[in-house]
Image (cartoon, rainbow, N blue to C red; front, top):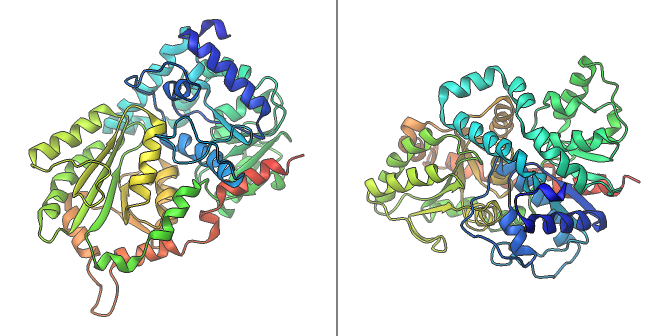
Length: 457
């Protein structure tokens, strides 16, 4: 297996990850992206800062990393991370370690990884292709070539791991559970995909779900599939939120909206979804940026999507709006973009969740749950699938989110920022307060997931 990797450094990294997984208290696996250059830097190797990561999903990275960070911070670790200029949390590989087998796909399978990202990006940018994708979603997911590509490195990495493995992606969980490993599979949305049920009858599989409704949906769907599932193996934990995101809510106060411009964070997903919606909104929002006194401040998150970032830069140039440094939190307009998911995730926590009053985003499992946990309201862009419509419903029912009126976003923001009556607060203030009043279920998921793994003897 190691002899077929893309370069010799990866052989060393693979063995290092394998050893760390065998020794750590909480082994964690996801399927989200490549972050090989960051791993090389972590282990003191030569690395290429200009090599772009391949990213399928920010959510599957950020959720897995949130569980690791919770462990590191709870253990009292004070070891400085070798990526300290990127990661603002301590790092203790003895307590938790995270891997993504995508980093170690064999050279002969690498084209499968590239084609999977390519297909995902095309779907994210083409309305007709997305419609086709919606019609054949399960078929497409079951036929994408990534499974055969990640299986060899995944089996190699976890060959000698005996502890319960926390899995953030059903592909990894099913592969490992299929060979008898104990797997704590996190169902990352309030939606039960068919793939989660594949091994649900096995006693070596436990499932962490968002809420009681998702648990009931899981059991009902299992019964329809003829699966005999012990309800005690389906545990309600809530979503895995990075403790640094939860801590951001301590600095939020709905009353501050009356004293300064509204702080908005506009985000895309790992594959660059909602590009045209965001393009259409930006020109309208820039009108509010120009008003004196300023009505809003905007931070955009483009991720690793170069074309998305270029689009934002082009619109800003055409509208004669300057893009300020990230460190200037009083600036009218800023942009988070780059080549590496690790650093981008940290920037989104530091400059996005800790700063924003509200997010304009599709209702994805990571962005919506993180934003609400950070004490932010939500304006939703078009959802990517049924699971995101479920997420949107969760936050609409709690009075935290509502659909963004893209073509009339300027009027919508001005209306929602105004008091409903002379003696009442605005919708934004009320929605932010609702986010600040969220019950513990929405904040403590990472801790509860770790407890499931810890108590599995």
